[in-house]
Image (cartoon, rainbow over all chains, first blue to last red; front, top):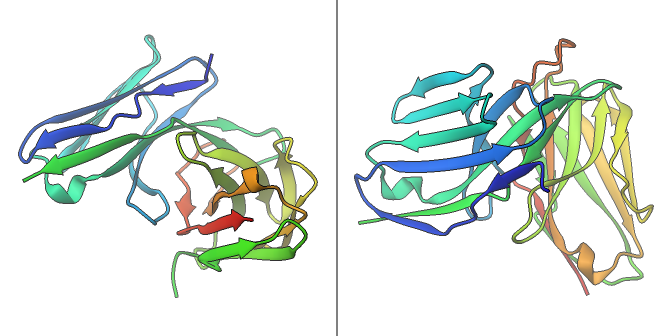
Length: 114
Length: 116
């Protein structure tokens, strides 16, 4: 079983739609939960960062964490064509030697159409 | 210049070549990472350096050799690679506060490597 499961898509939605992206995980040691956005030919960029269960909102983006179910979500409201990208969930755990390790999902490819 | 810079952006090398990938971060972070990104697969952690000391080697073949001369620079030396090593190699940095808090990585744009 993979540590992090994410539907690769592709997901195609019309402009203005609400998008729901999800990941499940199996490792209870994960402490911090993130969503990254990756445009073609670019490195991933951090979108949202959460620690505790619950919701965190930033503009059109809402990140939701349910630690009891080991399930995280990213909602995008009023989606725009510029939101077309691959969305990666990531979860962190501590490295004993220092630093931390991010474990990523495979990424969901999103296309927002005019 | 700001952020994390990787060079070269693209690299084509033969299986007998030796080449190096370079990463530089201008963020004052103390941890640096190499990740491999292959199509249809999750990003795969390769190496972690914290205060220029290697703290993680994720069972990476010895044909990949990292070097971290200081907290701002990270190299990945490549030799006798295989075609299956073709991928996007991403460098990242983060600030390790020692509490285990992960404030997210800042990634470079990657080096697209093709082994022929």
